[in-house]
Length: 350
Image 1 (tube, rainbow, N blue to C red):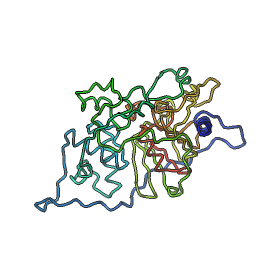
Image 2: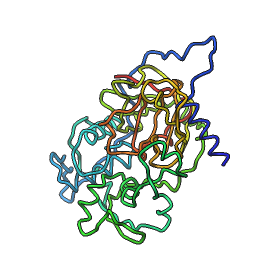
Image 3: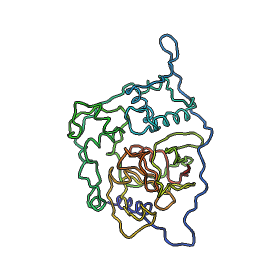
Image 4: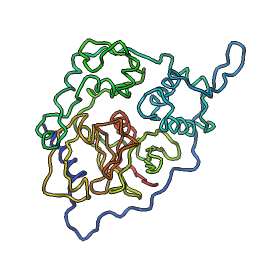
C-alpha cells in the first residue's frame, strides 16, 4: 500500500500536477544537442573461419526465419527492432545500423553469419503457467470505467504471451497455425521467438533507486527518426523505437533531465493535460497494470506533464501520435529503466 501511494504521488506530480506559483518561471530547457559524432567502439568479436578456412560472407537477403533470428539478436543486445515479426521493417534496419555503430562496424544493412550464430535456436516453446492468470482480467475502454478496476491487466492470454516475447499477435498466430490463440488456457504450449522474455511478474510498484554507476549516461531522443539512444559518455549502449508526441502536443525540444522513475504507476487521466497541456478539475486515477495508458513505467522529466513511458498498445509505437510524451513498448520501457538513472540528461531534438 505504501509503495502504491508513493507511485501515485509521483504519477500525479510528474504527469498531471501544475507547479505551485513561485518567482521562478517554468523550466527553460538548454538547447538540445545530438549524439556524439564519434564513439569509442567496443572490441568487435571476430568471426570464426569455416572448415575451409574462409571468413563467412555477408548475407544480402533475409528469409523470415533469418529475419526473426536477427531481430532476436538485436533485441537481446538492447537494440530494439520493434515488435518481432520476421519482417525487414524500418525499426529493424535502424536497430541494425545502430548496433554496428556502437561496435565500430561498417554501417550497412548486411550481416555476417557470426551475428546469427549468437542465436543458435530461433524458436522456443512456452507453456502457460497458472500464475499467468494473475495478469489477465476485465478490461475497459473508457477512463471512467477503467478507474473502477483494481488493475489494468491484459485482456487475454494471447496478449500476455505476445508482450512477453516482444511479438505481434498476428505473427504468433502465423507460426502457430494449429492453435486457436484467442482461446488459450493455462497449460497450453505456444511456439514463440527465442528472445529474452519480458517478465511482468518481476516488476514491483515503486521508485527506481538512483544508480551512481550510470551517472554519466545520457539519453538522446530523435523525434524525426523516432528512436531513443542511450550513451555512456561517447559509447552508444542501447537504442529503442519510440512515438514522440503529436502535432498538437509535440515532444518538447531541448535539454532536460530525469526527475524520477516509477514502475507500475497510477495514471491521472486528465483531458486538459492530454489535449492542451493544462491541468483541469476533471480527471480519473487509473490503476497500475500493463494496459495502463502509460504502461509499466513513468520516467518523469523536469518539464510538467512530460516523460518517457510504456504503452497499452505496442502495435502503435512509431506510428500513432502521443500526447507530448515519449512512448515505448513495455518490454523496452522495462529495459530503459535498467540502463539509466535519476538525474541523467535527456536531449530531445528533431
